[in-house]
Amino acid sequence: MNLRPKYSPPLRAGECTRTLPLFVASVVLALLTLSAVSANRLKDHVTWLADPAREGRQASTAGAAAAADYIAQQFKQIGCDVQMQDFGRMRRNVIGRIGTAPRYLLFGAHYDGQGPGMASASDNAAGVAVTIEIMNELKTKKLPVSLVAVAFDDEEQGLNGSRYYSDHPLYPLDDAQAAIIFDTMGRPFMDLSTWTMFVLGAEYSKDLSGVIQKRSRPGMLVAGTDLIGPRSDFAPFAVKHVPYLFFTHATHKDYHGPGDTADRVNYAKLAEDASFISLVSEDIARLPAQPKYLSEPVYPPGESTALENELQLVENERSDIPQGYRLMFDDFRARLKSDSSREVRRIATSVLLALATPRFSPFMLSFFIGPYYERENRRDLALAAYEEALKWASDAAERRDLEEKIQALR
Ligand SMILES: [Zn+2]
Image (cartoon, rainbow, N blue to C red; front, side, top):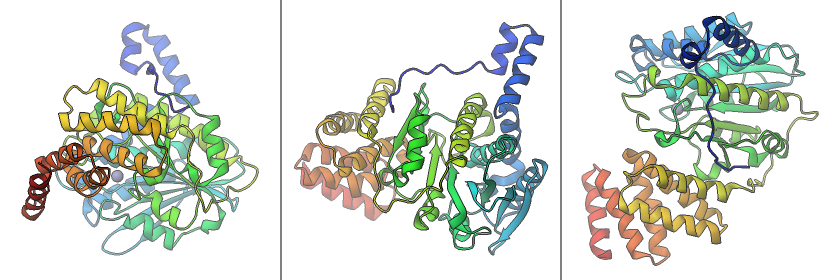
């Protein structure tokens, strides 16, 4: 598991019509639509939510309000009972439920975005679309649990919607089989040609990690949540000890930027992965007993190798990596082989994430990666980390601090 061999994407609609007669193509498409999550429906949702008329769906704005109404309407259309949960300043979570069994499986994704000029399509119109369509897919499966979907408002400014919901759940959290959370989907991590779907949270439940191991497949990277920290709407559920899984394709060059538009989302891949998550969810729904939240996490066995492979993959594919990063990547690939500590895995992940989102990198480079190398007496690599941080640091005090550190190490 957790290996990353080449992965052949399914035929896209456009490819079908070029290579097959139209009739066969439409039958194939119809079958795909019957058997799994529909790429076209995902595209419709993302396109509507990411439309410039929504003005980036920033919390407390008319664009976010319109998005909430759209989601409520979609939930109703697929057969949900819908409730709006107001939590002040025009912010609303949208909750849909299908089924009457007290025990339920929860799906969640935030619908708010980055504001005017930002379509926020992959982050996170795509996660909302996946939530709607997985509900639609699972409702026909005669599951022993109900299905609850929550579209969270106001994630971007501090997980406010999911925090409010977990403090004021419409259905007791004790009855949740698991919370399955989506954020930032439909674009490949770091714009690589191969896809990685990150799956986090399985370390807190024996049953969920059992399902993930059983369904394990190429392109999936199963890792402990501590490697990325409480970065999305799964965190408030973790605090309440609800077993959870977090699915993401993670960041890309347009992450939190104006280029995160609906036309750049790969809907065939999104549908494929949503169909896969739907199977995983079905397994979780059918678990004979409610999963228990482990107080001590049990980390996935292949995590270190998976990280090492991811670093290698990025180094192989991205010829534009700055030299400083290349040195750190090489160093961490070696460390991951010989050192199985959480610290090495966490810092290795920080190096990867720093390169993936340069605008947010100074913090990780100055406070985690540089100091780590200083402690390890690797002045050369500490220097590389601070020099990379200086390229992106904008704050004057921060720059001065970095310049001093660089002087001292030279
Ligand atoms: Zn997000």
